[in-house]
Length: 279
Image (tube, rainbow, N blue to C red; front, side):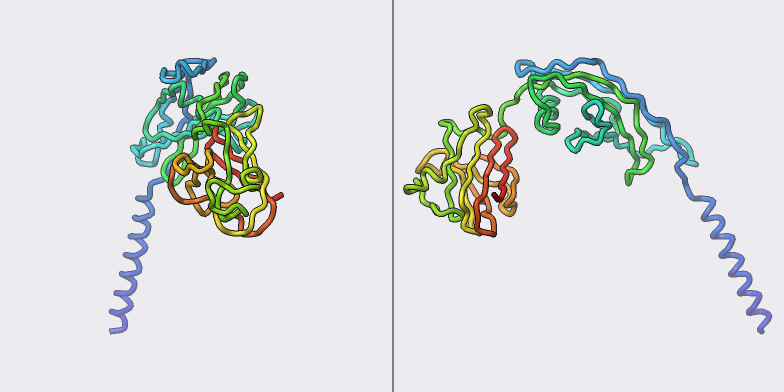
């Protein structure tokens, strides 16, 4: 009986080893691929507001042909077009990255590319910039990353329309219980002066205000005393230090800092962003 049991145990053990080896043999491994080759139909990009709806540039690249132990891959490949200023080696925190799945080419409209360069990369408008473009290809889970050659192009972005409409009369006030003036609209004296923003004389889309905050509460921005309909409100009512906003008679409000003190509030209509800094 004992011999029979030992025999059965050995058979099971042998079967397990054979099955395990067979399983290992069936694993699929990535053997590699060929770095994509990037091309463009232009080397100098002309960007103007008058042509913003026209095609600007087309980029195309070759298939990296990822190969596994079973042959050429049929998986979807994700491509990232990366853009940076020459010399930054794609390490700039404001570099542009646009993703595509499956495509081997992309065409940018003048307006779209201009928005990327001026709003995302924060490049100065009206000035020619030397730029570098490359393609990064990856499989699922960002595996098998391959990088293309680097293309050198020049571009001069133009000043796009502000993302948020600028106050029509050039005036802006902070109204709310985060400051001493409260929710009175119009603000009583002296808050109609102490809570009024200053428009930058050189950048008409930029407004600043240094004001005492009470700690907590919230506020809105109004461009005309006594009028709520054309107010500005935060898109995320939980971000104190800065975020995005829009012109709309709606909530949420801008959240006031938790700690009382003097703060500088900067409102950038060009980018549709606001910033709050303790002084």
